[in-house]
Length: 221
Ligand SMILES: [Zn+2]
Image (cartoon, rainbow, N blue to C red):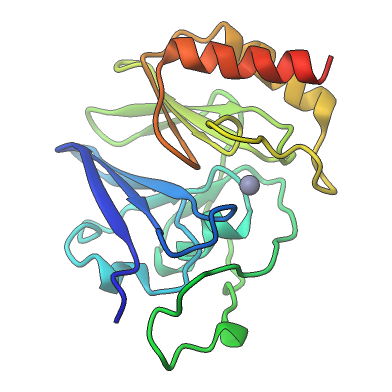
């Protein structure tokens, strides 16, 4: 059995989980955060391999899952959790692209994401309180209509999903919206944060956030 998920501790209370064997276009990060009352998982990977079995212990306190948007590489394992939240705008998902089978008997054609309901709908300004840790929802459409980011104001940490990351940003999907994306980037140019934990690639600081947002605004001007 391949070690499907890679896990990196950012600190004792924040863990980055990624899927190194997924095609680089679809290899997403997701983030586990500990609160005093409740833990949270921001996004849930492709779901090629059962997440809770693969990383025993981490999810023992039955975390809430908040989905930054409805693309396959972010929602795959969300059905394993009993409390799911996202922005109500949903969308279609692309096909599976992986470069290694989790085990020799795995049938990629059998992969599917279980239909799932949301238990909470999130919109701009909503707060998710985990105890000792509060995340504010920022609705930043463009990549998709329902894209959200989560901001922890106390630490200046932004969980940005696919709204912004190092690398080519995707604004040409059927329900992408460049004008909306530009408004979202204008918001991010002025956002005061210390670190951005994105849906793809490595984390970066405020200076880089501003550069990436300004680059997008120039490119689409
Ligand atoms: Zn996406």
